Amino acid sequence: MFRPQPQREISHVFPSLMAQWRNTITTTKSTTKISPQNGNSLRTPSCSVKFQDLYDFTVEGNIDDVNVLNEVEERVRRQGKVWWALEASKGANWYLQPQISSNGEGISVASLKLSVLANTIALKKLIRKGIPPALRPKVWLSVSGATKKRSTVPESYYNDLIMATKGKVTPSTKQIDHDIPRTFPTHPWLDTPEGQASLRRVLVGYSFRDSEVGYCQGLNYVAALLLLVMRTEEDAFWMLAVLLENVLVNDCYTDNLSGCHVEQRVFKDLLSKKCPRIAAHLEALGFDVSLVATEWFLCLFSKCLPSETTLRVWDVLFNEGAKVLFQVALAIFKMKEEDLLKVHQIGDVINILHTTGHNLYDPDELLTVAFEKIGSLTTNTITKQRKKQEPTVMAELDQRLRRLGSLNLK
Image (cartoon, rainbow, N blue to C red; front, side):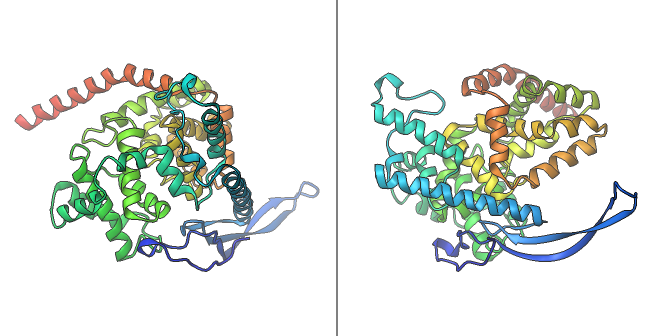
């Protein structure tokens, strides 16, 4: 059940990552229902509950939400037993062996040993069911390619980078300093001087590693959540590096956000194919999906989903690639299809999607829709769609720059 747990010490005084669901009844409200027998109104009490989730984020919900999270905690515990049993039978690092690339690149299936192929299939199924929090850092570093990326530079690379950038001021560092206090401001560690300094070092370090990206709003939330999971700055830095350089589309976080604009067009096209009724209805309302999906893609759902649900999405993202973002975004729309078809105001659409995301405490509910009801979605399909949309996006951005240029000359 949700209860206090003793904290354990980890790098940079991170909060405890043990299951610590601490709840407090904060308010009691009454809801009115009409009795079907006599038409009299009945008042039923409902409780508002505040509790801290697995990563120390404060969540406010009702008793049903607490029950869901208790079920999720139990599933996490059972899934952990599965992983530990595999470690006992196959060896502690069985998932660190060579795997088939999730996007179809790399070693051909024909050249793989049967054991490697079997491990790859087993790992994909396991990851979709969730990686135990204690194993997430090691598994993410392996399946994402971050460990391999780090091995190509000297061991002191991160510390040298931080020392070399200390005290330097750039447009990126100024924006980082502006955004850090607003990054999960109610989190008990991220809202401390130590937490904010740690997040700043990771973001500033990466802004100097890749000056073309520098820093983009949204990365602060991604890096903050990486810090909470990875437990050390250096591991979080390399996860951020592999994410931006290998997992996500190029130019997603550059100045003109061209990659993000491409992703939005691809998503809109996929929505019309996978959820045609929703797409047609939203188009009739004049609703642009980028009103909600831009933040989803830039923050990788870290601002709109509960933390454990977000991390379950990231489990699959690091193993299978960016196609997962489209599957999850489509699933959120699909889950509320009937509700969306009933509304006729853009504000109501935004409210439904916002409320749905924030209340998705059960990761399996979301991922079941994403992988089973949305249907197959391959990396090759996404790549083809990107190539199709890129010329239009670049032409629009070029036209926008020309208009801005002409205005500046007046």
